[in-house]
Length: 315
Image 1 (cartoon, rainbow, N blue to C red):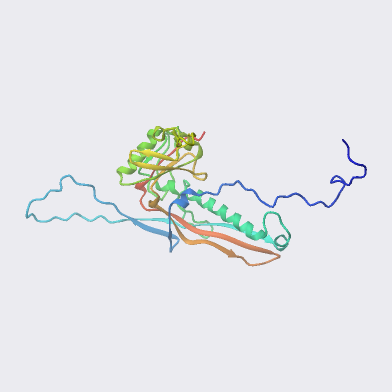
Image 2: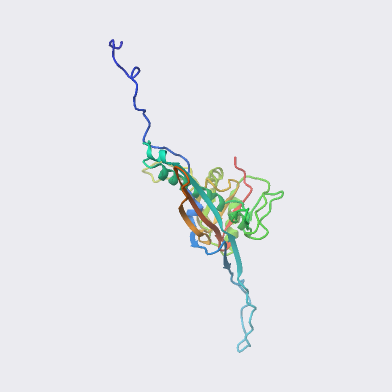
C-alpha cells in the first residue's frame, strides 16, 4: 500500500491548528471536610472571644430535711476563651494582552485565575484550621496566626510515649509530638468513651488516608455487603458503630496524617472578621491585579466534647 504521487498531506502542510483540548483537567483535591462540616459566625475584633460553662457534678447526696434552712453553693464563673484572627490571601496579576488573546479551556484568564485561587485559599485555610499551630498575637512585622484544632484538644486524648504532651492550656500552645505507634481500635474506643463521659456527643472521626484504611479493618465497622442485587463487597468503613452511637468516618487530605480526631462538629466553628473578599488592586501597568482574602479564626466552644488520637504511624 502506498500514497498516490503528489498527495498533499498533513506531513507537508503548514499552518495546521494545534489539537489542544478546550478543557483544562485538574485532579488537585479541593474538599475541605472540617471547615465545611462546622458552623460559621461573625467576628468583630482581631481577638475573637467567647465563654464556656459546665454544670456542677451530679450529686448522690441531694436529700434535704423538711423545713431546713436553705444553703447556697458558691457560683462558678464562666471561662473566657479566645483565638486570633488570621489573614489568608491569594493574589493574581494578568496582563492585558493575555486577557485579550484567544485561549483554550477558558474564555477569561482573570476569572479563571481567581477561580483557581479561591480553591487554593480554601485548602490553605483547612490546613491552618486542622494544624498543630499555637496562636500568634502578631505585630507590625509578624502576621497573626490562629490556634489550630490540635492546640485545643487536651482533655480526651490518646498520645504516644516519649516526649508526647497535650497543650498545657487549650488554645494557647501547640501539642508536643510523641513516639509514633500503630492506630488501634482500643485507642479509638477509649477516646470516644472519654468524650461521652465528659458530656460530649461526637459524631465524626476525621483522619488521613493511611489511617482511614486502618480504621476500615476495625471490628466496629466489620466488612459488610451491599444489598444482594449488587453482590459487591464493601471493604471501606464510612460509618463506625461505637458503643455511644454512629460515627461518620471522614478522610481529610489536609489535616495531619499522624492524628485522628473524634469531633462533635457543632462544638467548633469558623468566625470571620472578613468573609471571603475579592479586592481590585491599584492598576500600575498594563495588567489587572486582584487579591482574594479571608480573615478568620477557629472557635472551640468546648474542647471536652471532642478528642484525638495522636502520634500515629502513617505508612
